[in-house]
Length: 445
Image 1 (cartoon, helix red, strand yellow):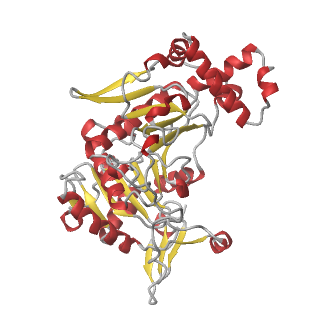
Image 2: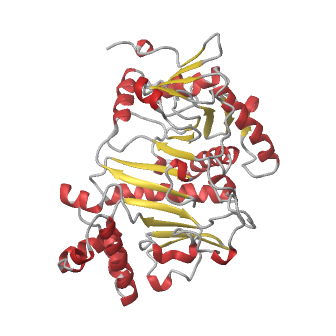
Image 3: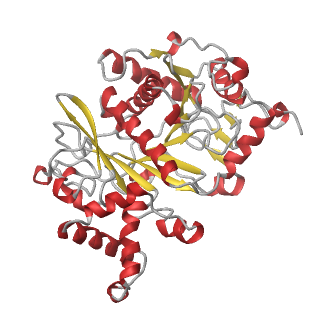
């Protein structure tokens, strides 16, 4: 096997004309940033902002608090009162409006990997928690009518006719209903559609508009769902966690939410990464955080995590790495989770709610024997892939990593001064950037 250092060129190279050539050290993706293309506006094209129709308060989209019945029965919700935050599980229809959920965990009505996929290919069966939610919710006529209406909507969207639906056997209808309780594609939905006091339709409530405490609860609630999906489906080899913000990034609704999708295989990129990791266990220190530090790309840090302007990505990207020796999010301590949350929240706040983004989580899958640190990549969807990229597999990223760092740092200082991000975050030259700060590798702890 060739030495890792010989696999491809230096990750970052600046040409005499100013062109920046990037190679992703894990995937080998080739990216160029050409001078003069980085001053395009980041705001996506679309209709201009308009006054908010306040008569629709709580009902702006299917994820809003006034439209709970537009979504499948929730698995859990987080509520907040003067005593703090509380987790409530398996609300029946009759109790949905007793509290206002700050965050809800609901099954995706239109799954990517369906309940039937797992049932028919693996013999997957609902666990006792799914059966309990199912039996309690269907214990009333209203609950039964609700889930049967949603199951019919899903069936018609898949191409089934009304006649076929009404002609289905009771057993098949029962399976269609159970899919709304035992599926392994979940959505974590935030309460607000717009920020408090909003007047214009572009005043959307994004990750960055949450308080640090709210964002911490959002992340913790997502991590709890992640662990739960592995527990409920023993055939899942990986659960993908991601957030599409705004329609140009793939969101169905411009309403803050994350998604978790269980899949039965690891991605090609993960397999490539594992091969490189077997050749160099210190890969993520040497070719991610330490390399970024030497290039002055690290822009934020705290005791538990570090953030830098990424390189070798198709879009301008911010990367947040956990320093923990634990490699799976659900194994992190409460403080470690908060450290990751604070840096991710700061990155969202610096990006701004008007920028379409994809948030992607990467971590060590349960069946992988090598440590892989939990890391999150926040991609700014500010360009569209075109024929040049498809033909050459060279991707044009309009903002080079140093310019990206400068944009983010300029935004972070006033955000910290205003108390809108965690005050414990060190910025720019305040960052310690100690070599081998990621403790996932037992050889450098």
